[in-house]
Image 1 (tube, rainbow, N blue to C red):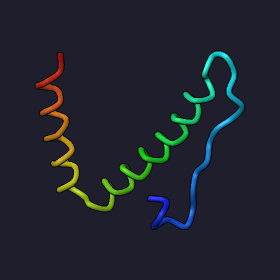
Image 2 (image 1 turned 120 degrees about the vertical axis):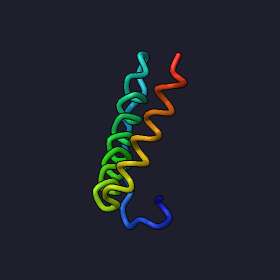
Image 3 (image 1 turned 90 degrees about the vertical axis):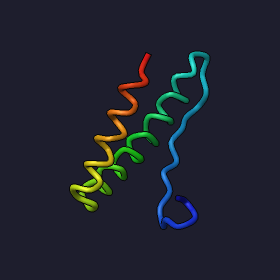
Length: 64
């Protein structure tokens, strides 16, 4: 994504003993990816919603 995008999200901080900074960094990136997925879902319309529902059904069937 960074090769085609004009923007980059850099999240991080000083590493301390608990490692919470790594979790916060990953969470920030996950929020961006989630927003991109939702934007694509809105742009693609009903076909994307149908595909997402099918994927969720498959995952639910294979849950432990």
